[in-house]
Image 1: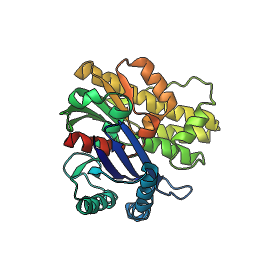
Image 2 (image 1 turned 90 degrees about the horizontal axis):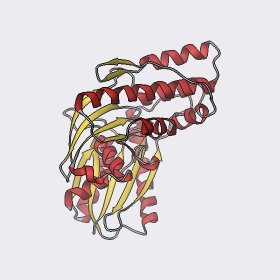
Image 3 (image 1 turned 180 degrees about the vertical axis):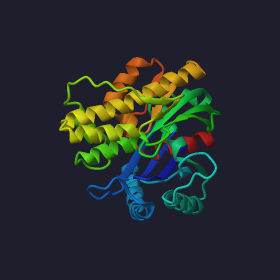
Image 4 (image 1 turned 120 degrees about the vertical axis):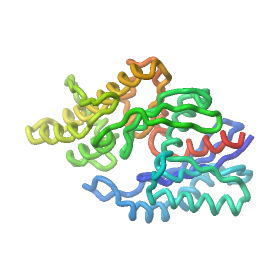
Length: 312
């Protein structure tokens, strides 16, 4: 039995998690980065500042939830967005530096991974597919900064990933957040668009723009702007945006399955926590697995899971 502390300071969330491998349970603590009303994101300099201020609060909250940090055996931390050369964002230095200090003070090993790998591991854990830690599968990571599909091979102690499809322009989360801000909704806008979309009974038809397995999403924002100028309801625009993103993800899935064969599919990232998308995609693909909502958005849980796998 081990207790693993995970830390993740991503672009929009400060998070820490404690994974008790004996009980198979994860306790999380998170804080969203503040974004001013009407703005569509946060600058990296501001993200670093807010993570620096928030991480002590997040760790203190986690400690209280867990009843203390006695017996921590290892620390995991995300140090970069993706597992490729040159992948870097300043916000991850806050978590990385804190994890190194804790590792030295506690005298326990430190394990680093990418933010994307953390998302994949969190999805495997929360969907009950930890068997794929030693398998071959397709992983979608769909968020504010990423719309990618990866061919993943689990080694039991980590992953090797090959990028096989992506959005060639706007990312899915960007299309959603920009549409939300356009409609006067808070940022991030996913949950707010979802609530509006669920009130719309219209059938939305949208043919995605595809290039092989890749998609192009910039047309969604342009169409939503046009609909707004034409007087369409907020509910209709919200449903159109989410349906267009969903159809694009399903077209990517179709193309990938045709190219790579029938493999289990994991859908991770904040965008994939949308209930409309989950319902439609689950009904279409028998091999589809989704992260639970609390493990979909940015979190340190998957980081802790990967660190645990490395020491077991």
